[in-house]
Amino acid sequence: MSDAGEPIEHIESIVGERLADLADGPLLLGFSAGLDSRVLLDVLVRVCGAGRIRALHVDHGLQACSGAWADRALACLRKLGVDGRYARLQAPTRAEGGIEAWARERRYEALESEARRLGASAILLAHHADDQVETLLLNLGRGAGLAGLASMPARRDVIGPGQMTGRRTPIVRPLLDVRRADILAYARARGLQWIDDPSNEDRRWRRNRLRHEVLPALESTVPGFSCNARRAVAHLQESLVLVEEIGALDLDAVRDPDGRLRRDRLRDLSEPRLANLLRHWLRQLGLRVPSRRQLAEIRRQIVDANGPHARVDFDGWRLCRHRHLVWAEPSPRTPADVSSSSLTMSAPGRVALPQWDGAIRLVRSTGEGIEWTWLGAVPIVVRPGKGRDRLRPERQAASRTLKNLYQEAGIPPALRRRLPVLERDGMLLYAAGLGANRDPAVPMEPGGAQLCFEPGASTPAAAAFTRD
Image (cartoon, rainbow, N blue to C red; front, side):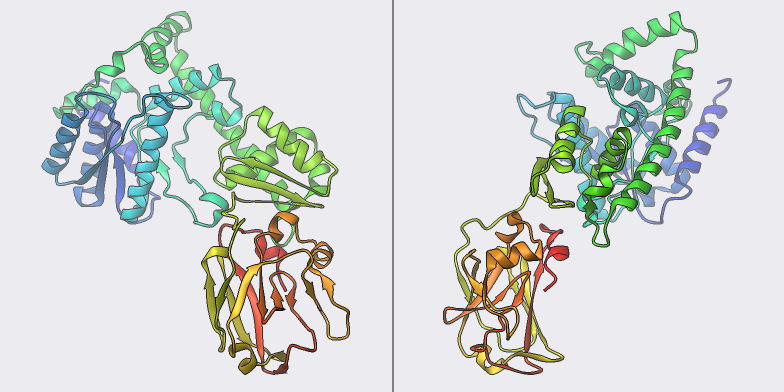
């Protein structure tokens, strides 16, 4: 770049374009106070105004002087009139996947938590074009697939687990098309000061070895390597969009009206298309992308195996199949040893059942229901069902065991253990997923009580299986 004005105007223009389509609201900057985030802070204040910017400095606790860096970062923010906070992490002596991976994951968690607290419209990170090339090489060395080789998107809208918590805060990287040399030129033109982290020179870290040793060698061997690598990433990101669109179309095609996947439709897909659909499905749930080995195991048990039901635990979730239906749910807080409890029900309303992660809703029946005065005369016991419990689904029908009725209703065995039953004076009144006992001993009246179990968020599939 030829003069001091050019890098300032150029970078401000790029950042302004990146932020143009964001919703109104605070913008949360991940602020290390190093060169890159210091330049992004300066640009944001000039483009958006200090009042819209919030900042979070994450102290990973990995350097003896990190506390002093946090103080300098907050002082810089105060000087510019930007509201900022810091989060201090307790670094472990060892971490699965390495300290770098631990620091990255905890940093993103802290930023997401702060963004939710603020109601921020985006999280802004200061990754730049050279970081993109380094990420490509690191992921190539790991044998990553298309999603890994596509490296960092300029914007990422992350889906919350199970889509139950809605979208997480978008992550935006406004400097992703800006080279490190141009960022340095901007900082010097503006007379900025920043923190130099000595660990950036430590060749023990793979990214630092790439930056200081590998990339210079590649540039000297293949002139223009970094520029061409960024172009390749752009091509890969276009391909990734197409692959994800195909995954979304296939996912819609195999879903039933309740959002469960039909195994017969999964089996109709080619092997690469099925693998792509499963990856897309798991990403939509907010889960990490499985390795090839993990994906093969998921496919073997959930799609290919012939047993009546299957389950695979993955990334804190449970992938389940019962007969021809496949679904996912958070690993349950199953009340394996839930003790019986009692409650009083005498009027329409909703009675929470915390142990069962759900509630019983009482409504006034449009036809015949349980007699209100009789229902409220004594406490009702809520307890786990037993296979030998008996219930009469129709007045004229014989009573049958819950095990038999659950099998007929297609309710998976694993789900049955999380469905409560209600009894009065030793007689079953209601079984979640099956309905009320129509035994003649249960007095009925027009407009009487109708019971319904409402499962909570930790059992999303229950709502589809338990319409009684």
